[in-house]
Image 1 (cartoon, one colour):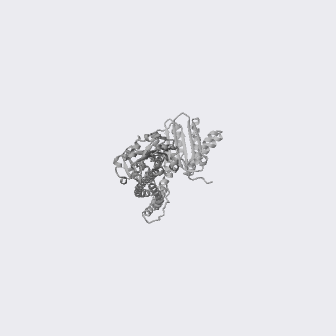
Image 2: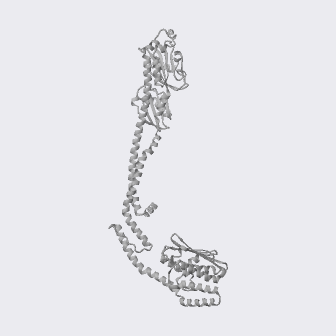
Image 3: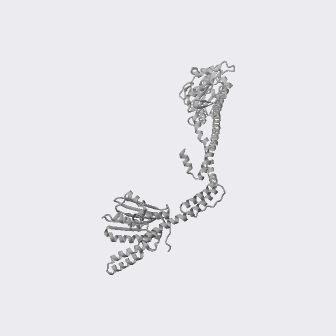
Length: 604
C-alpha cells in the first residue's frame, strides 16, 4: 500500500486525474459488464437447453416417422386380401408348386418398389403359418431362416405371439442370428404376428429389417461436440442405436423401471444426472425414447464467446474514455505544465520567466505567486550572485597582477635579442615562448577566451617545460579544429597541465608523457588531460577540493588552489551544467576530464 501511495504521489497532475477517474469508473463498468455477462450466460444456457430439447425431439420425430412408415406398410400387408388368401389357403402344397406365387398372387412387386423408394428397408420376410413357402427378400445379402419351424424357436417370435399382433422393435447387430441365418449389416428389426380379423388365429409372421445407419446418422446430426452422446431406446427400454460418448450410468438409469414406470407425458424432458445434462423425448406410449447426454463442462466453452461481448464493451468504454479524459485533464494540467516549464527554465538560470495568468482559480493564484517570486529572486541574485561573481573575477585579476607585466615583457624582450645576437637561437626561442606565455596569461585581463588561445597557452607552457625536462617530457595536443572558435573561461586547462608536470612528472626519473585532447560531444566541449606520472591517492584528490582558503596565496605555484579555483569559476558560470572529474591511480597516472556547454563562438 505504501508503494502504491508513493507511485501515485509521483504521477503528474494529468495522470492523477486520469488514474482517479478510472479508479471510480472502472468498478462501475466492471459491475455492468458482470451483470451483462450473467444475463447473457443465463440466456445462452436457456437457449442451449431449448436447442438440445428441440434437437432430441427432432431426432425422435424423425425416427418415429421411419417406424410409422414401416408400421403402415406392415398393416397394409396384414390386411391385404391377396396375401390373406395365401395365408388362409387349405392347399399349401398346391401353392408351393408356383415358384412365383408371391409375385403373381400378391402385391409384392408394389412392396418392393416402396422398399426401393424408401431406401432404408433392407430386408422383408413373410412366414405363413399354413405351410406355404415364406416370402424372403434381402437387399443387403443377408439371409433369413428358411422355414417357419425354425423361426418359432426364436425369442422374438415368442414375444410377437405374446403381443397379439402388436409391433415389436429390436436391434440385431451384424453377425447376430435371431431371425437371420446370416446377417450382413446392423439392423433395427420390426416383428409382428399376422392374425385373422378376429385376432384369434395366427396366420403368419412378418419381419422388416431397417438399416441401423439411418438411425445412427440421425443421432450423429444431433451431436454438437465430441464428448456428447445420444441413445435410442424402444418403449421397453431396449437399446436400438447410439452415437457419441454414452454414459453407462445414465443409460442404466433411463432403462430402469424407476424412469420407465413414469408415464411418458410426465417425464422431464431435461434433467441433470451427475456431471451431465440429459435431454429426453418420447411422443408416444410405445414409441422410441431418445436421450442425449451433454457434459456440463461443455457449457464452459460457451463462457468465452459469452464473455467476449461484455469484455469488449468494457475495453471499448475504457479506451473511449482515454481521449475524453485527456481533453478534460488538459484543461487543468496544461496551465500547470506551462508553470512547471517556466520553473524548470528558471532553475537552469533563466530569470526572465513570467507565465501569463489565464484564469482566476487556484492555478491562476499559484501562477501569480510564481511570477512575484521570480521577480524577487531576480532582485536578490542581482544584489548577491553578481557581487560574488565579481569578487571571484577580482581574485583572478589579483592573481594575474602579482607580477608586473611591463617589467616582464621588457626584460624578456632584452634577453631574447641578446640570445639571438649571440647566436643561441634555441635559447631565444625558449625566451620568446616564455614571453608569449606571459602575454597570454596576463594580457588584457580577459576572463573568456577562444579555445585556440587556451591551446596556444598550453603549447607555450609545455614548450618551456620541455626546455627544462628535455627528453624526460613527451607531450601531444590534439584538439579538434571545429571547436577552436568556441569561447571558454580562461585558464581552465593550464592549471591541470601544470599540476601534471609538477606533481606527476617532476618527482620521477621515468619519461613523462602528457596528452591533451579536446572534442565536441553531444553539445559539450570535452577536454582531457592525461599523464603517466606518480598518480594520487583518493585522499589527495579530496584534498584538492577541500583546500583551506588560508593557503590560497601561500605559493607562487598555481597547484591545488588553481584547480579549486577552476572548479569554483565553472560553478559560477555554468552552475550544474558542467562536468569536472579526476581519475588517478598511484603509480599509473592521472586523467582529468572537463566538459562544458558549447556556447558562443568567435565571429569573423
